[in-house]
Length: 136
Image (cartoon, rainbow, N blue to C red):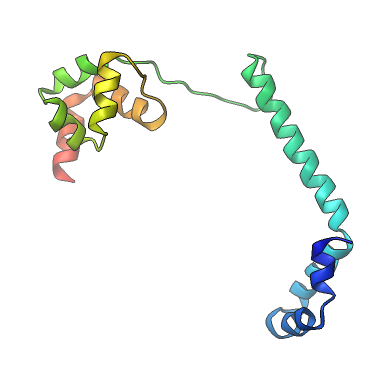
Protein backbone atom coordinates (compact mmCIF):
# COMPACT_ATOMS: atom_id res chain seq x y z
CA UNK A 1 0.00 0.00 0.00
CA UNK A 2 1.46 3.38 -0.99
CA UNK A 3 1.88 6.27 1.44
CA UNK A 4 -0.58 8.32 -0.58
CA UNK A 5 -3.35 5.75 -0.22
CA UNK A 6 -2.61 5.38 3.49
CA UNK A 7 -2.89 9.15 4.00
CA UNK A 8 -6.00 9.38 1.82
CA UNK A 9 -7.74 6.72 3.87
CA UNK A 10 -7.39 8.52 7.22
CA UNK A 11 -10.62 10.10 8.47
CA UNK A 12 -8.96 13.47 9.11
CA UNK A 13 -7.65 13.62 5.53
CA UNK A 14 -11.11 12.81 4.17
CA UNK A 15 -12.68 15.57 6.30
CA UNK A 16 -10.08 18.10 5.17
CA UNK A 17 -10.49 17.09 1.54
CA UNK A 18 -14.25 17.53 1.75
CA UNK A 19 -13.84 21.04 3.21
CA UNK A 20 -10.91 22.31 1.15
CA UNK A 21 -11.26 20.65 -2.24
CA UNK A 22 -13.83 21.14 -4.92
CA UNK A 23 -15.67 18.04 -6.15
CA UNK A 24 -13.40 17.95 -9.23
CA UNK A 25 -10.28 18.17 -7.07
CA UNK A 26 -11.59 15.38 -4.82
CA UNK A 27 -12.02 13.21 -7.91
CA UNK A 28 -8.40 13.91 -8.89
CA UNK A 29 -7.25 12.70 -5.47
CA UNK A 30 -9.29 9.52 -5.83
CA UNK A 31 -8.02 8.99 -9.38
CA UNK A 32 -4.45 9.57 -8.25
CA UNK A 33 -4.85 7.11 -5.40
CA UNK A 34 -6.46 4.54 -7.73
CA UNK A 35 -4.02 5.17 -10.57
CA UNK A 36 -0.95 5.93 -8.45
CA UNK A 37 0.92 2.96 -9.78
CA UNK A 38 0.16 3.91 -13.40
CA UNK A 39 1.23 7.48 -12.66
CA UNK A 40 4.50 6.29 -11.09
CA UNK A 41 5.18 4.03 -14.08
CA UNK A 42 4.60 6.91 -16.52
CA UNK A 43 6.76 9.23 -14.42
CA UNK A 44 9.53 6.65 -14.17
CA UNK A 45 9.42 6.06 -17.93
CA UNK A 46 9.67 9.81 -18.58
CA UNK A 47 12.64 10.22 -16.23
CA UNK A 48 14.34 7.18 -17.73
CA UNK A 49 13.82 8.52 -21.28
CA UNK A 50 15.30 11.89 -20.27
CA UNK A 51 18.35 10.28 -18.69
CA UNK A 52 18.91 8.10 -21.75
CA UNK A 53 18.75 11.21 -23.95
CA UNK A 54 21.25 12.99 -21.69
CA UNK A 55 23.64 10.03 -21.91
CA UNK A 56 23.34 9.93 -25.73
CA UNK A 57 24.00 13.68 -25.89
CA UNK A 58 27.01 13.39 -23.57
CA UNK A 59 28.45 10.67 -25.82
CA UNK A 60 28.16 13.04 -28.79
CA UNK A 61 25.21 11.31 -30.40
CA UNK A 62 22.28 13.23 -31.89
CA UNK A 63 19.15 13.58 -29.80
CA UNK A 64 15.92 14.30 -31.67
CA UNK A 65 14.43 17.68 -30.79
CA UNK A 66 17.53 18.95 -28.95
CA UNK A 67 18.92 22.28 -30.09
CA UNK A 68 22.06 23.36 -28.32
CA UNK A 69 23.83 26.70 -28.55
CA UNK A 70 27.33 26.89 -27.14
CA UNK A 71 28.76 30.42 -27.19
CA UNK A 72 32.42 30.66 -28.20
CA UNK A 73 35.07 31.10 -25.51
CA UNK A 74 36.52 34.59 -25.22
CA UNK A 75 39.82 36.07 -24.07
CA UNK A 76 38.45 37.56 -20.85
CA UNK A 77 41.44 39.78 -20.17
CA UNK A 78 41.29 41.25 -23.70
CA UNK A 79 37.54 41.86 -23.33
CA UNK A 80 38.04 43.63 -20.02
CA UNK A 81 40.93 45.72 -21.34
CA UNK A 82 38.80 46.82 -24.33
CA UNK A 83 36.34 48.34 -21.85
CA UNK A 84 39.13 50.33 -20.17
CA UNK A 85 38.06 49.05 -16.74
CA UNK A 86 40.25 47.62 -14.00
CA UNK A 87 39.52 44.11 -12.73
CA UNK A 88 37.71 45.57 -9.72
CA UNK A 89 35.63 47.96 -11.84
CA UNK A 90 34.76 45.28 -14.42
CA UNK A 91 33.72 42.80 -11.74
CA UNK A 92 31.57 45.39 -9.96
CA UNK A 93 30.02 46.72 -13.17
CA UNK A 94 28.94 43.32 -14.46
CA UNK A 95 28.22 41.63 -11.09
CA UNK A 96 31.01 39.10 -11.55
CA UNK A 97 32.98 37.81 -8.61
CA UNK A 98 36.46 39.35 -8.61
CA UNK A 99 37.94 35.93 -7.84
CA UNK A 100 36.15 34.33 -10.80
CA UNK A 101 37.31 37.14 -13.09
CA UNK A 102 40.92 36.65 -12.00
CA UNK A 103 40.68 32.89 -12.53
CA UNK A 104 39.27 33.45 -16.02
CA UNK A 105 42.01 35.93 -16.92
CA UNK A 106 44.76 33.57 -15.69
CA UNK A 107 43.18 30.71 -17.60
CA UNK A 108 42.71 28.48 -14.50
CA UNK A 109 38.98 28.35 -15.23
CA UNK A 110 36.68 29.14 -18.12
CA UNK A 111 33.46 31.15 -17.93
CA UNK A 112 30.30 29.15 -18.65
CA UNK A 113 26.59 29.71 -19.04
CA UNK A 114 25.20 33.21 -18.72
CA UNK A 115 28.61 34.64 -17.78
CA UNK A 116 30.03 33.41 -21.09
CA UNK A 117 27.07 34.85 -22.99
CA UNK A 118 27.53 38.22 -21.25
CA UNK A 119 31.26 38.23 -22.02
CA UNK A 120 30.52 37.51 -25.70
CA UNK A 121 28.12 40.45 -25.83
CA UNK A 122 30.67 42.72 -24.13
CA UNK A 123 33.34 41.51 -26.59
CA UNK A 124 31.15 42.45 -29.57
CA UNK A 125 29.61 45.70 -28.29
CA UNK A 126 31.52 46.95 -25.24
CA UNK A 127 30.41 50.59 -25.51
CA UNK A 128 26.74 49.68 -25.95
CA UNK A 129 26.83 47.34 -22.96
CA UNK A 130 28.55 49.95 -20.80
CA UNK A 131 25.96 52.54 -21.82
CA UNK A 132 23.15 50.14 -20.95
CA UNK A 133 24.66 49.34 -17.56
CA UNK A 134 25.26 53.01 -16.74
CA UNK A 135 21.56 53.82 -17.27
CA UNK A 136 20.38 50.94 -15.09
